Image (cartoon, rainbow, N blue to C red; front, side):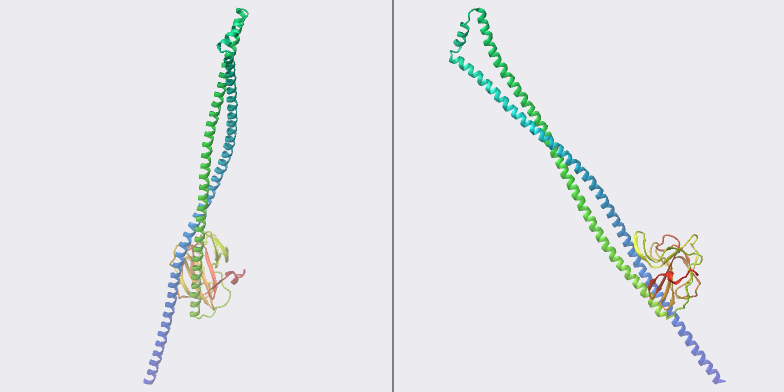
Amino acid sequence: MKRKAGFLIKMLSVFLCFAVCISCFSAADNYSVVSHAETLAQLQAKQKANKAKLDEIKKKTAAAQNSIAEQKKKQEYIQQQIDVTEDNIRVITEKIELLEADIKAKEESIAAQEQKIAKGIEDFKARLKAMYVSGGDSGMASVLVGAKDFYDLLARMEIIQRISQRDDELIETLNAELKQLKEDKAALEATKAEADSDKAELEQAKADLNSAYEQSEAEQARLKKEIEEYAKNKAEIDKQEAEIEKQIQAIIAAEAAKNKLTYVGGTFTWPLPGYYYISSPYGSRTLFGVTKFHKGVDISGSGVNGKPIVAANGGKVIVANTSYTPGVSYGMYVMIDHGGGYVTLYGHCSALNVTAGQTVNKGDVIAYVGSTGQSTGPHLHFEVRVNGATTNPMNYFTKAN
């Protein structure tokens, strides 16, 4: 009896030890899941920070591009003003050339008129000299004395007066014409001075416009350099994003290796029963103005919000994330390790029905459709990863499903 009791006590001790060991392994396993979840949260925080930087880069790039477009419009306007100014300069230059030709013609006319006046004066002087040589006043008197009668005397006096008057009138006419020519020349020179001033103003305006055009060119060059810097920064952030994604995949692979589950096998079941519309397939796509590789498929449809999401296959929940930032990453999401390197991800959920470390069967409700994280509306983002690398989820389904 004592021997039997001793045996039972030993067996109980072994059982208790075994139970404690199982408990320890389970606790350690859960701790590992939580630890990875925390690491994923840290990576998501980095993704959030990177998204903020990318959004700022996108905003600044768009602003710079808009500024370049404005500068180009400004240049078009400036060029139009330059063209008009150049046309005006050409017109006023032609006007100045015509005025210069008219002034030159007036100067020639003035010179000719001055010669006429000089000749008239010389002729008058010659007559006076001739009269002086012939006896001065006595010469004129002899002309008058030689008259036959009184009427002849009057006629001779009339002739002498007319000759004198004609000389006076000729000189006066020539002087009046000379005065008019000088006035005309002065008017032409005044007009030319105004034209020269207008041309100088136009040339200054053209110089200012050219300067404004060059400043616009310099501003565009500066903005283009900024855009190049933004592109470099974006490339660096994209590189960081790729590294973060690589780390996430490494965590998934490490978790799968730790679990050492054998792949459950069989065809996956559709994760969103009753909804089969693919709003965004696997592969490259453009969202929010940025082209990226879409790592899964988006399943949606009318009334999909809040509908139950089921496990595509049996396995262990390795991530059940409920902490998220609006507009960033997957939002609320679940990741299930199916063994053999196979992991599925269910993103943008409105609520979760499982916790990390929990074992689920194919078809179990694990979450509900939502629009959390970087999402434009209610849908399920579904991924299938093999050894951490994403694959096309549609390869695991047939129309019969």
